[in-house]
Amino acid sequence: MIYVIPDTHLGHENIKKYCNRPDNFEKLVETNWQATVTETDTVIHLGDISFDEAWIRQLGSWNGKKILVRGNHDKKPCDFYMSCGFTAVVEELVTDTNNVLILFSHRPHFGHECDINIHGHQHNLAVYDAKRLYLPLSLEHMGYKPLALDDNFIGKLKPFIIQNRQPTLKEMMSLGQDAIGKPSNKDFYDGFGKEIFTQSKARLEECYKILENTPYNSARFKFRLWRNAIRYIEGKIGKQEFLRVIGKFL
Image 1 (spheres, rainbow, N blue to C red):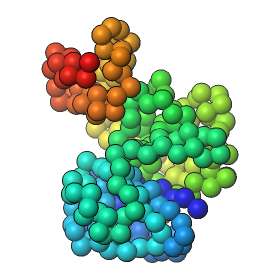
Image 2 (image 1 turned 180 degrees about the vertical axis):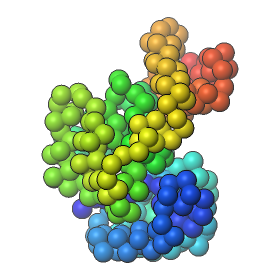
Image 3 (image 1 turned 30 degrees about the horizontal axis):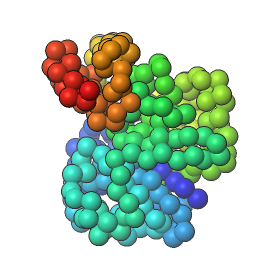
Image 4 (image 1 turned 120 degrees about the vertical axis):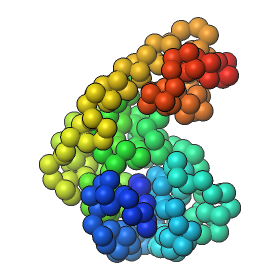
């Protein structure tokens, strides 16, 4: 069996405040993992394991074969994570599961060409991009449990892919993310509020328009281009700086 889990942030005190996690959330994660995952299973960790080396080693000793899809906080060398028990360390991962092409990433990969992008990072269920299909995973919504990518789960995903329709919040919650009940404003507006969320969506739309035109369209599928484009989408750089940065990928 293949499982997926995002954003464990073990030992991270501030995550308790930011995501309203209980004081014993690390124990919940470990207990649920060990009760669910066997040594022959594989767990895809969608990044942000922990800032603490001891916690990383502890998670690395838990059941199963472990693949790390690097998060923005996973900055140690690959060899370190391998020494802690991870089988592989990657930036992104694509699987073909029952004829569903799934892209696993830490952040949402805008402009992806798979059937659906399963990602973490946001700690909520908000979706920026109307042009692609996404399933953001929130460990809080998952009840601190690994999510099984079994036939039942894939069967629930297929109708959205066939219809080319983004799951609604309610439908995303039915995909193993109903542990905390009713969604909050964070799940609609990405944790930063409606205004910033709306601005980010508008910048993403502008990115698509730019990349549909010469000379940028030849570079529009490059992973590193979109990794830099996120800075513009999040409002960290202006449009001219964005054009200069993506010009490097021509």
